[in-house]
Image 1 (cartoon, rainbow, N blue to C red):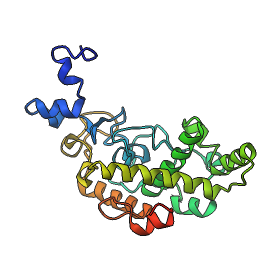
Image 2 (image 1 turned 90 degrees about the horizontal axis):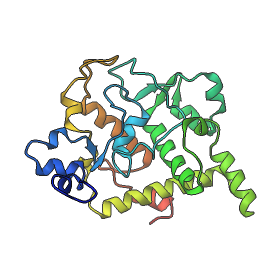
Image 3 (image 1 turned 60 degrees about the vertical axis):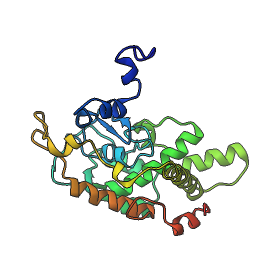
Image 4 (image 1 turned 135 degrees about the horizontal axis):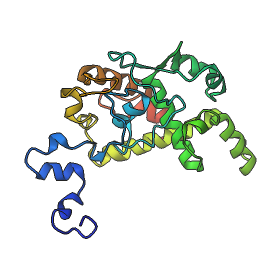
Length: 247
């Protein structure tokens, strides 16, 4: 029905957001961010870099642009903590992570992972992975990073490339995509979870009773913008664009 746009399929073919806008009272139940349906992880039950990425992802509720090396299946152990998630993957994994030491010290604070800073790192790295054509599953992200990619690129092209240049390319890519979205009319208020996540607590499971705190989520989002060198409205600042040779 959807493929042929027959009957109600004609409406559903427009996607969850547009269908919700046309059906009275349905928008509240439309699970999407920026018009794209969110994936399987509910941020009320699993608050992490991955689920936070639904807000920062340039595609909206997409789970593939912010895969990161600290992903694990643990539920929230500290329901009121929004800035950090627990690493919980062991010292051996930590030691293998291909992240420059200075950034490692910023992202990791003991067993805590700074979600805003890890989000930026992960998004830039995934931009590189997608450009090169490398799998983005967590086991790969835990063993391959910019140092390896720089060596690979240098060997294949004969162009001497550093890990710093690799990550700069990823950051340029992410900022270009953000600029494209802004040009097409993206607004700051679109970087928000479905209203149900803020108003309805989870009915069961290890995180039963939890709902998101809007103000705390926005605080983390503002720290992410700062980490990126963007304005409080999520717009790449002129200084950042100059730094990236984009303006």
